Image (tube, rainbow, N blue to C red; front, side):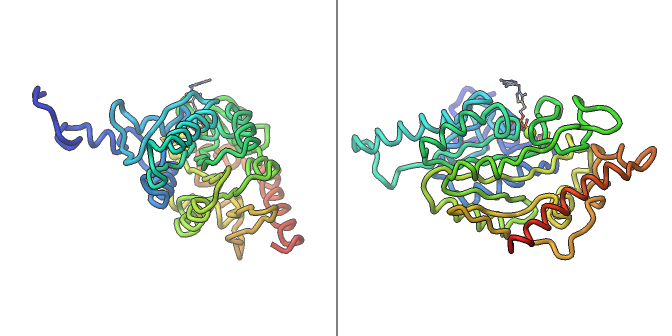
Amino acid sequence: MSSQPYKSLKELPGVHALASGTAMCAGCGGLEALHEVLDVLGTKTVVVNAAGCMTLLANYPFTPFHGSWLYTSMASAPAGAQGVRDALDILLARGRIGAEEDLTPVVLTGDGSAYGMGLSATSAAIERNLDFIYICYDNEGYGNTGQQYSGATPHGARTPTSPGATGYAGEKKDLFDVWAAHRPQYVATVIGAEPLDLARKVQRAAGLKGPRLILALAPCPTGWDYDPMQTLEIGRLAVKTGIWPLKEWVDGKIVHTRVPHPRLPVEEYLTMQGRFRHLFEPARNDALIGEIQGRVDRYWQSVEERGG
Ligand SMILES: Cc1ncc(C[n+]2csc(CCOP(=O)(O)OP(=O)(O)O)c2C)c(N)n1
Ligand code: SF4
Ligand SMILES: [Mg+2]
């Protein structure tokens, strides 16, 4: 490499490509959602990222982001966002920066942090009414370390830590409800395969102040075991089968922003993924498939009874 100082990343062969995300798997649904979210939020952000797959985007001293980037341990991203917010407030109060230079702290974590390790820090940040946006890309497992099950893994999914004939015995935690129970400013579920719905919700969140959650289901070809070309199709099926309800919570009211009609059988979503193959091969497990379908049916029935 030349000893001349460089002017841009493009002058370093390979680095720009790496910093642009080629360290990620092809077809990553989390990256798809993150691209869409940041397109709306713009550059006046400080992304506070807990360890996970998205951490691989930043290759010190470069990041593919045009805004700032801060790395924290898995449990600490909301606390990191508090530090960023406090530092910005001090700079504003001392007149060191003007209001036009203010930034939004944006926590970015996987489900391992959001549903588990970082939940206590999140709860405390909401309690303090921290002014921040939390983006969780939910690939339903500890993806970066091999897709071990997390608090977000769906019932019946096979993971390296739930291997047997019936997969994961637990139930996916309802993070939307956990957040809503804290009565924050805004809570929404999104998916990269529905970019208009996602963009409208991120825009709405950006216009508010206080704790705001954008929870994105993140189809993960590596962890869910499917062809990377099918990320969009799987994302659409998550919505069309009703497995991933698109909704938002504002002022104590839940509104579903897409109601699947007609709702497709969950089987269409499950059969596309290797993590559910044991439900169909070597013998079909009607009881477990029925259990998964029944849970989704009961959810939408209760939505209908409440009037949306
Ligand atoms: C306290 C702690 N335990 C374990 C790890 C190792 N680790 C790094 S990334 C990761 C997986 C995180 O899972 P998730 O938050 O769902 O993000 P994903 O990897 O799926 O993107 C783990 C377990 C860690 N960094 N810190
Ligand atoms: S393991 Fe999944 S979430 Fe992680 S980079 Fe690969 S596709 Fe994306
Ligand atoms: Mg994960």
